[in-house]
Length: 138
Image (tube, rainbow, N blue to C red; front, side, top):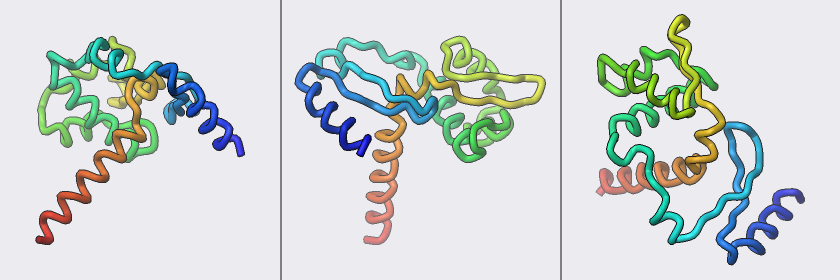
């Protein structure tokens, strides 16, 4: 029932360029401003640093795989880079990660759920994987 109310409210405010979204990292609902013009204007924090985007993506995978926190070595292995600590520190400064070098652990902060639509990301990845599977079968 609650999700239906949220969906109807979201449809109602959509013409204003607003959407109601759910942040799975903090388990909170929030209102996001989404319009084509705002997408063009908004800056991509990783635009000139694709290595940070790649490291963050690998960290997301590791954290989801290990239910919240991940070993830094696992991020290195997936990223296939020897030195990811500088990237992790920079992502921590940006507010996306909590880093514990003493325990060699990293975890995502709720901020990532506000800046990145994780459900949409995983839906797109699933579709891409499904399309790739289909192409391999041909």
